[in-house]
Length: 584
Image (cartoon, rainbow, N blue to C red):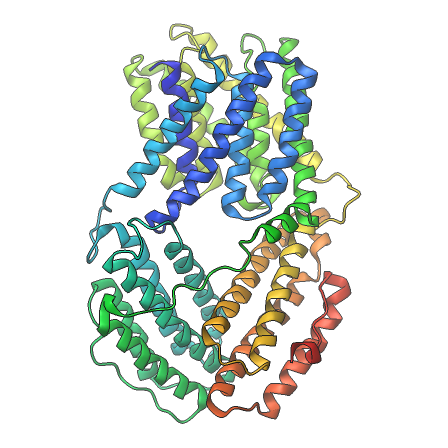
């Protein structure tokens, strides 16, 4: 395998990191955008490493870290793009390759593109109903109906809150699965139109089920049977058939019955049914992205990534120019390791560092054993293929993923010619150099992660919580206005619950940090819980208004109490104000 093959292999490996269970169309964006960012990083790093000195190179890569860190605050795909940008910049600057920078970029994109093509084109190991290209979308939509059924079953019991959160997660996943680029030209295939219609039909069902859960009264078992049969119909690709009708003794039950009738009609009419489309995410505007980049979350994360990455680059170059690591002169492992460690979406900082150190040590030991036993180069190429196949399985745990990637990268380095195949001592030295550099990167990130900054800490968590509060206010204002625009209401409801779910995930992650970091987000969990209750109450109000045209004293008093409770959290959690009069 030539050095060109090594670069292509790195592109495929990094693209594999971005793969997640879900639809093929969503994978195009989830893997394609980070691959493009990686190509840009490889280009910048290659030319900066070739034409600048250590000081200028450190400044260039530090500035790149500031940009990549700020971009990473936007969301998971942007975070993956920021990671690949920095990792490939370090590789391009430090990995000695004979090809010029522009050729490296082409090889990198070829490797990443090949993996994306395989992800999109190959059928799954277990065939579903209909067009296999939509198996991810079909599974996601069926999971929504199954989650609705589970929520109805849990209504009135202690598991209702957890089931409602699971319903939000299922809706988020289905919305992402259906929002990818079309596999055919507009207006889309028969299967695609049918799945969009089925997802749209699930929205009023989810709304009615949430209102019933808010009321807290157990519902008859047959109420959960209808969504369960709809989930089976989605999986089978057929019609819904007869559905058991729930009782119509309360507004939310009547709404559930009406939603079941609408869903059955949408299923039975099939692909010919007209639908209003999947509710779009309102945050995807340039203004919202810019606010995230320049907001407290983007600034805090950008500065932290820049400091960690820049310090790692500076220390790595100093050590290797002084030849303190012996025969191995390649320094890119240290800053690349720091990038993965500083990412907050991979788990709490302390656990990331422990997992990275343990995984690297184990991977280096395994690689040294394989390098001594396997024939070269065929055995090492087989080891590369084996590690690539293990990446999706190992991704379930950061330590396991680190161990697999360590073996994979060291094998790629050897196959690419950076290590002489006959130099057993060099192989062993290089493996343990990787362990030493990983421990050094752990120390750098641990120190930088706890440094005091002029910015208010916990900005990323508060930024998400503020976004969730603003979305909740828009949803509440729409419901209390008495608008008949139900499609608009469902879009606002989706955005509000989704924003809250993202905020709660960030809060849970921050709470698992060491006390020195966790204390900066203290009080945000209580605010998020109050917001959750407000959204559930707003949903119950919407369903009740549809049925009766007016709210009960229980609804209005509950909203007033929750807004008052939010006001108490305002200063501590940094929330914007929501006034009942303004919402109405």
